[in-house]
Length: 279
Length: 279
Image (cartoon, rainbow over all chains, first blue to last red; front, side, top):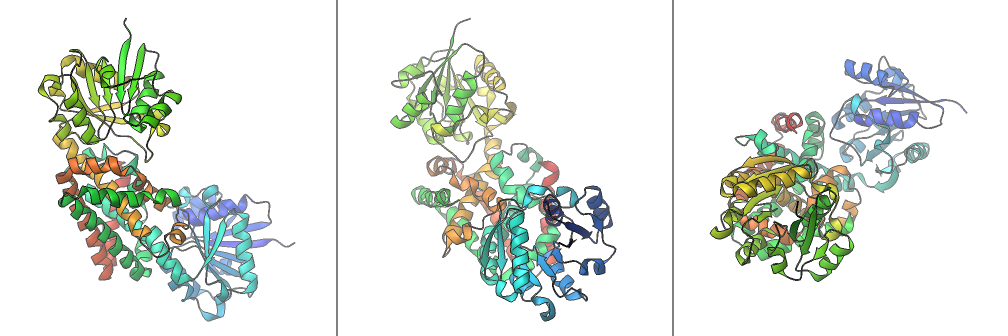
């Protein structure tokens, strides 16, 4: 069997961790990495996230499997810039939005493309945040698979299964609605929480009291602003819907407290408790 | 040295864990527990959270140190019901609000009373949620200490230090403002998030995608509605202030997205990132 050449564009948390996970397998992979940040490139090689650094995108275009682990707007511009992709190549993106990406891929490489969203991550970023177990036993969403070629579908399923992911399939439109609620809106909430405390008179004294609850609620407010700006832009409509719903819930809670309607408030909290039974 | 008799009213997460932590020390403590829930009483004894169950409050009144680990409204009613507290007794509450409690203790036992808030907890409740390490290396806030007797101050500091807590001192009014931001409002946010997802058409399908971010943000929405109803009622004014601030932040975020002002949104998220440097 021939060696499989894998290219990873973007050597931060997601791309770096894919490199580590693939290198841990007993497979004949050779992994080439590219990042527009020079210090990240150096760091990625030192951390052995990849076997080799690519000089430019042409070295990536020679690969059999290409992962795009960059912010969601960059995913679109990179796929538009590809010139010499191999006919059999599989290009997989790892972005947090799927509809715009899935519908922006140039026709000539659409069958090469597989739209993927691994439901995993941390608030950290950059090559040093990468770790081998990021993907293990986590959910992977594959979208609009009917637009991908037969080979590419199988290549993508195989490689994600090999690193321990549990695959689910979804229309990219449905994906973006669901992730607005499960991920994008909660990030906005966390940023709002962090800023509301940081805007107080003595945030340091307040934060000195932070217990586990606050730390959990504010963790994702540490996430990369640049990455999330793009996600919020691409999933604008669904995100605004989700933000309206959570604001309505919050207003309802506030109104019940203002009016001393604590029995209703108790019922509202008991309803939220149901979450316990689902996740 | 004589044996010290310790009474714990409320044998859930907080009270049960105090029992376990004190029993792990090499001190001559004898621990008596009381709970209004009969099945909790039985469970607490089986789990060895306490040495003995009290038949009623009179057995607790005989103790040298009494912990009140019940919801914040019950703390007030129990202290009002005490009839035969020992002159030297130290009564310590573990409630999440402090102002109303500190100012509701009957004059005749106010010096016996120490207002304490351990900044620790989990979303679980009942005797089975108790664990020995809950308090270790966590922050304890002691409030209005000038209202407590000299002996009681020292007894409280000593016992919390013995289980590994880091003590800070605060006025109860200031405590309630800070905890509104660091704890009470974030609980309301988490309940709102949970309900906004549970109200969607197919919450189960959405929740199937939940990654670490959502799980963290929704964890405390599983907390006891009865306990939090009382906290929200007692800290109503400060909580409403905090809710107004976080709603304003959320509205600002929403407006920026609606108007495509993504550069400002990026700055707003970068500001939240500062949290990274503080906690």
